[in-house]
Structures are given as structure tokens and as C-alpha cells.
Image (cartoon, rainbow over all chains, first blue to last red; front, side, top):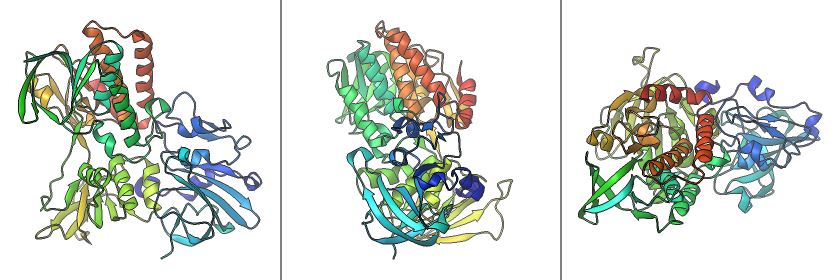
Length: 159
Length: 359
């Protein structure tokens, strides 16, 4: 699936998530399934929660005890392969990277999109940040239905 | 005739980094580039780079170019820059001929670093010369350097990192990418790039190639066809796309005309992108004092070209009698970085190629 279509399997996706109790606080979900020479997630983490090690071809490991879900790694990942996920009541709160114009505006409802690029439901835009240190990659915080835990990956403007 | 001790041909990442190291070693040099802007292909790269921070990972290519050019401009006394100047000849007595401002200039050098980069591979299919059929480099130049949309409906041919990244950039520019087709049974580039594309709703079709383009004044349609395990066309699997542009991203091949012209020993090594110069341990070609680095001696990522440039700059200036004050320490550091970059599964191919390339 991933090698032929660029879509991770459900097993792959699930392997990146901690359990529900841990997700009561926001945590980084890193979908880096390949050994590629890259380590900015690890070096940018302010809490030393992501380990790659000496060999930058290693896959990143998240220490969920240390991860605060701040989202710094999300916009520092050159592969845009990281998001932050939090269970909030019967909803899910995600922080994702977004690099398309026009940017979403707080309060708007956009489409929630899965890994195949299909519309799965609605996403409420809660917040968008774009500071200088984010270097033109916006961080968008959205609220989606709890059923989309392993499906939601990005947003698209409704047309 | 102008006399210069060290001439660096090509001001992309490898050439810029070689010039920086030479200057730090106290070695003067002349850096020649045929474009008006130094930085090579980096000036078209709007995405964040991989690697470690030592090679500017997570920095956008365009900003890496600025940083490397800034480093070089810190040494105006030692690095002379000729931009918009094309090297048209390199001869065995190390005379270089340059076309600059419509003048034909001869430069007598003692040592040369060839860092001319790469050219794009082309694909043979019916009507592949119709207007609207571009290489990925041209698409990036139009879009990211000049702000011109190359089309409105496009099919990308090739799923290596360039094909995937340029597809993403096309979508950012508001161009509709209908599909990415890939002749091999697997996606060529990093899967994180592929996933980035898929979530935008663009299909990546493997085992598929372009059969022909159709159009009178410009491309209007293309026909694709599926390939079986033996890379033969599957009859009846043709599919038509209405397009006004096609982007060909089927790989790069080293630009080695100058190495060939001066008569350095060459080898065909598919892992390195085609015909490459044989490289001796101190990064020289088979001709003494003719060095080669970056994509011009084998296709790799820009991060590797940067580090190879630093190494070659150190070696060439040492050969000319100017040893960098931190030579040993820097050589160790850069060799470690190169090994690290080539250590993963994507580096295996490169390492195989380099084994064949070494003299």
C-alpha cells in the first residue's frame, strides 16, 4: 500500500498511536515508516522527547511521557509526517502542518481528509499559527469526530 | 590569458562549498557559473530539506542557496565570481575557455574543480517534443523562479523525490496534478513525500508509462499504458488524460562534458546516474589536479553535494599548498557526515556505485 500508493495501512497507522489514556493529553504522532537520513524532529524537540540517535537514518521514537504535544516537531518535519493528536471528550483535537493558500480561518468548517485524499467528514478550525520560526509552514488546530482517530490526516476547503 | 591557481566550474551547492573551504584555507579561486544567480538548483527548491542540521536540514532550498552564497561573498579578496559566464572548453594543459559578455576568455589554471551538476534524463515517446511537455527543472524554474504557471492540468511522469516534490509544489501553485505515473512497480521517492501527495487526492499509478502525446500546436492529450512485470505494455490498458502540460521527472544524469573533454577516465555506472569520471581517493579524476564533486561525479542529494564540496575544497587547496588550519578535524567531520547520509537503505545504491567508481 505505502510502497505502491503512498497510503499507510491501518496497522502501520495504529502502530504510531499510544493508547487512549495517554491521548487524554496532546501527543506527537510520527508517521515516518522508512529509514531516511533525516533528524530535525529530534533536534527541534524542546523536551528531548524524540530520539533518533547517532545514525540519522534511524526512525524516530517518541517518548510519550516527555512529549507535551507542543507541535514544534510538526512544522519542523521536512516530510510533513507529524501531527499532534488529543482525545477531548467525544471529539479529537489535531494539530497539523498546512502549506496551501488561502489559509483556513478560525471558526470555519473545512473538510476532514483521510490518507487517500478522500473527504471523511467535517473539521472545525480552532486555531492557526504562523510565526516566523515556523518558516512558512502553518500549524492548524482542528476538532474532528472521535471516529476519525486513525483516518484523519489533513483538511481541505469545502467547495 | 588570465592566470588563476584554482578554478571552480559550477556555483551550485558543491561548487559554493568548495570555494568556501578553499578561501578558509587561504587559497584564492575563481568561481564560474553560467547562470545569473549562484546556487544551482537550490534556488528553485521551496521545500524543506532532509538530512541533519549540519547540512541545513529543515531549511528550504532557496534559503540554503542564500546561506551558501553569503558564505562565499564573505571572502571577496579570495573568491572571484564570474556569473552569467559559460565554460565552453577545458584542455589538457588546464586552459579553460569561457564565454562571458560575448567575449571568449582564456584562463590558465593550475587546478580545477568540476562541479557542474546534472542534466535531466529524457523519455522517448511519440510527440515528446510538443510544447507543454517539460522537464521537472523547467517546471520549477518557471513556477518558483519566475512565478509563471506551466499549465493548468498536468500529469507527472516519475515518482522519484523530484516528481513527488514538484507535484506538491504544482498543487501549491494552483495547478491541478491529475496523476503521477511511475513505470516501476514501486514509488521511487521517500514515502513521506508520496503520502503528502496522496492526501491531496492525487493518484500515484505504478507500473504505468506514457505511450504518446497528442496535439497540434501544443499537447492536448496524453495516452498512458500499464506495464507488466517484464516492462511490456499491457494491451487494452491505455488511458487518456486531457492535459495542457506534462512534466517529465525520470531522473538525472551527471553533466560530465568537461571531464570527457579533458580526457579523464570515464565509467558508466547506472547507480550514479550514467557516465561518471573515475574518482581517486583525493577526489581527483584520472588527471592530476582536475577534481570533480557533487552531482557532476554521481547523482545524490544536495546535502551530499554540500559535504562533498567542502571535502573537495579542502583537498584541492591542500594540493596547491594551502592547508586549512583545521584540515584534519574538518576532513574527519565531513567524512563522518557523508557516511551518515549514505548509511540508510537509500544510500545502498550510492555506495554500490561509489565502489565501482573508485580507482
